[in-house]
Length: 398
View 1 (cartoon, rainbow, N blue to C red):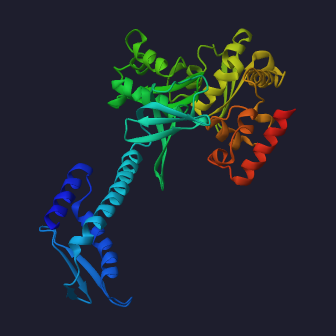
View 2 (view 1 turned 60 degrees about the vertical axis):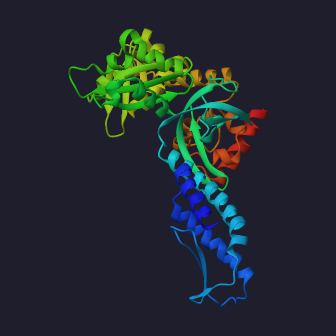
View 3 (view 1 turned 90 degrees about the vertical axis):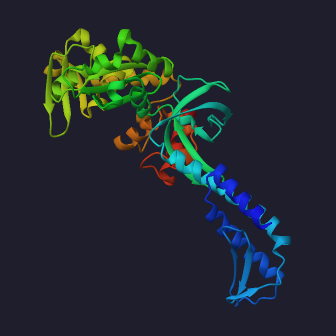
């Protein structure tokens, strides 16, 4: 048994990557328990078992004196087997956890394994299972069992049953990472992605900047005949992508972010990071975009609050463009079968932003959410989550 044990441990070390020393320590510890049952010892007695790392010979010591009346050949085999199986399971879980912990913020590939209460369970190439929560899914995407899928690793949790790998197809950084994979100039650091604003399934705006004057940042991302950006659009199942040239001149950056709308004038409030953007009458709807999407994404991309106005409203008819945006957003919510999050009591600007960032686009999505999922949103605790779900259900019933 002695030589056989060492041979088995060395084989496990090669195949599973678990060090032989760790396995030996575990077997020694288990054999101590077995030895206590085999010989007469009191709780005060010190008992230890040692396994020779080269020969595999097993010795037991009671209060530093060797015990010779234990038949380890009889009990070592079953004990070692149980310990080895347990250690292999623990080590495999640890290896998976460490492996995917290092992939947080990266894209991983897998196949759709099964569907579970709106969530998608993804087989990550046989190494582990990832979970694509409903709130992390792009609303316009549909997947079938067995279909290949790529997703962004948001978080990796250590649980008793193993690593829980949280995936996302709605995260803005999914688009960023896809560009890094598709555009060599970004991967090499010549072109830099400055910011990303995304409404998953609909549109993404991405601001890029070149460190080399000879390299056009937008052209590099678009690719020859648009092949690079087209590949990313196809990966996102048709989501539109606007590639914006970053500019340190905030006015020029705002103009680029609101493209293709023509801008007449921009008034800056640098202290509060607000900008009043004046556009011709015929450019107002273009600047605002369908359901306010263009201005909303441009605002997120730049990090400034943008107030779109025509010359007439800027001269005195306050609020009309804003009203148009609010009405447009309400129309969008009705089309999606829900009510705007702004209608939900107790939702401030920070909470609103966090909810939208997490993929909650309307009151209906809050009403359908679970306490557990809602508590994962930044700034929302159990009491607040409970209240939000309760209020959302009231609104949906009306």
